[in-house]
Length: 495
Image (cartoon, rainbow, N blue to C red; front, side, top):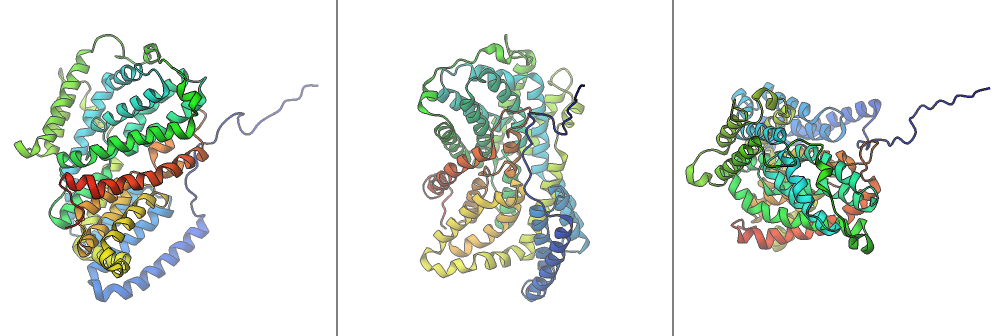
């Protein structure tokens, strides 16, 4: 007699990283009713202080925040719904709503994604990874070379999720080569998404949240952040923060014996990708030249006066032009994350409404008003509060751009009252929002490297250990930059 055993779950399969707990349908509807009642009470209490437009904007804003936290609706859908509600209620005019999609930051991202598609199509990224990582002779050298290589991608690939997708195949190759050294593989699994997130602050295009911050500060104060200024302020932090992350990952996940063992990564490990070995191809040489020209154009904007969006689109045109480019416009356009662009446009509309209606100023007084009771130390207390809230906001709002859309209008409205420069406070908040490592669902790059059947990544407990070590160090590092480094670079914290 033959017995056949059936399994409902394949053996050895690891569950994918779980999303943050969501409300069940009955609980969700109950929460919606409670939210609507709270909004009604809030509207009645603030209408006299804000006026109709301010009250409507505040209600829509709170509803959007609640849905970003609890609802299973995509972030872009929530943002678009909030922006359209403001239009339909007459709080925002149609020109403002449609104008955000044509904003220069949107065109800047479109051009950058088209150029990134050309870089990927040539195999240049894999070639650089192979050459850089092949020079490693020990674990410490390896993690710092990985860190440096990922830092460079900040200027070639916009958005952290795109950089994570580019880095994952490289990690899988390294994991296969180092399969006999699981501690080192675990170190890389935690380090690579961490560096992608920490190093993003080095470029204005590093994350959509940076563009949102620049647009909101410009709307509120008349001054935003250009590519060169953001680079000057953010790159030193990105370098130090990323390499600190590498050292902490080594300390947390490896012992002295592991760190002392030599290693060698053969170039042949990367030969599965085209264009890795041999001399540079013509397409790769053209892309390198194109990247150099585009980045130089962004950095020299104060001299020539050409908007960075125009430079990006000129670069995109060259990258996709027949006989010149490395890919086609049709193929490159398929790589553009249109939901991200719609989300950015909608949140810009929401940020403008919060500022112009007075809702952000009212909300700032509600949230940070008690800080004024601190007297002479009010400014310092405000800075610490902004830092702590920004560092911990990823536990509530998973989208980095959504966190900036929520926090920056309030921070910018409050800072001048307490003698703090609003641009410095906004930059600090946006930089601190780059820390989002506590849970696998805290950020898309972190989730991508979690352990699964296909990825020999980390476990949630590993991430918690790393986050516990990095959180206090990140806070100290950011405070040091806010009080010492950025003032020396032309961004004083106090007015």
